[in-house]
Image 1 (cartoon, rainbow, N blue to C red):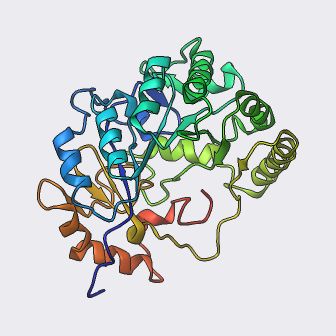
Image 2 (image 1 turned 45 degrees about the vertical axis):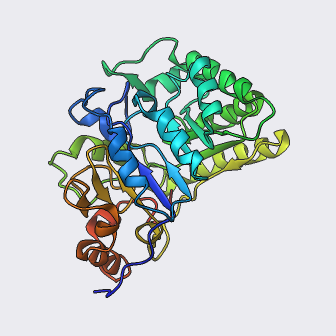
Length: 335
């Protein structure tokens, strides 16, 4: 086991709310008990204690499984971090991103806002991103697109927040990627970020509590088999060509896993849930998976230097990495 921990990280990802207003097909929120808005909110005092215990902090991402805009403290959190010179931003489903909210985010010093849009048409998008009743919400796609326009208008000629569209590529929606490139270019966003499913849960019991999301990931992952991957490559190539023509910055994932997995998260950053569980990264999805400490029991610097954290880092560098990393797209080079 390593005798020393690395220096405190420069990046934290903090789940400021465990509650969500959507039940998206590829998200664990859909398959887990609902979390109320009040119950799911990270207390502002706990947030301050956490971020102020990490003087090395340079980047702060205020997101997790829940929707950050449901946090009653989000703007105060952004102001505090920005006041320290920390780049701070988050990913949102965009439903609650009204014009007044957008103006407040710009004024608070938000560094980036990533907005999820998993389709270029209402039918495809709403098939993926369901409401809390686990059914499509008519008009939601148009609402998110309008909110994006409002955010870009609120930003005006400023460079912040950087506005990025995020598209989770799956079998059911990858055919609309070229059309989404055109939509993104027309909106004037800074980048379109395409990513694979973050985890396939191959380390879990096929009949256990992760059975439903595991089955969904297996049925939708573009990298699951070569014929599916090849069809995705065609869509990716067409999207890249269209993005070049329109001058849109486009990030595409790869579809073939690396021969040797790797990950720098446990040395560079950490993920903290709204309940104060400290995990090595945001990709594990599940508060009981790979929890290395709890802020109710110790400070973040103490957890960062603890024996469980050091053991996790050592295992990740070995020929037998932690089981939870086996199905992770980041570790496998697919994200």
